[in-house]
Length: 263
Image (cartoon, rainbow, N blue to C red; front, side, top):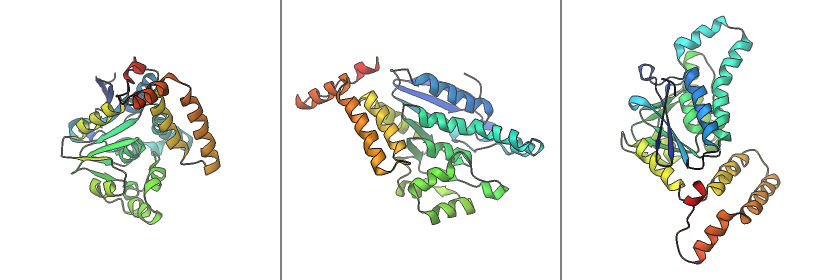
């Protein structure tokens, strides 16, 4: 653990906390690399059902540190590309991780902070929090997958409004659009994310990992390709011990014991 990233376990949930409160938890190289490291490590840890991303002192993430970004003018374009890749490799690691990742948004998720929150599989947010994709206000363009993730749930004109004006978007509006799973009172987003993680601990871990992977592939596959991917996943699931326990429990009218598959 580095100072930039606090890690802790709460039962089956791994919490990764951005710890840069003096800059409203702006991104750092150490944080991004730490998240990648922890996600890769937890992939094979059967005792972890889900991962929660949050920030210290009531703010999720302010995105890139402008004091750092302005110095990149002195770098070559190739070097700037490599620096941006640190964030993008973190986004890729989030997508590749078989564990569901839950954002717990308090205060705000701005710039790349909004990208990171939207990259998560589930989002819990305090009702007084906001998202802001305000790159253009400082002459920069969106990164971290912001354009891709916004386009998954919002029509093109709304995406353009969010990108081009950079206004703060109340989480209530994002909740109406389906991008926020749980709205909470201020200060309760982490607890709501923890609850979601504990619920995920009650389903089959292999099936959960497959469902996440299928949801991601559905964004780019056409129907024929996705049907084949689903068929392969289902064929594998029907032959494992996890589905044997789940089906037996349903027929016997009892709760399935999936916990034993996490040991």
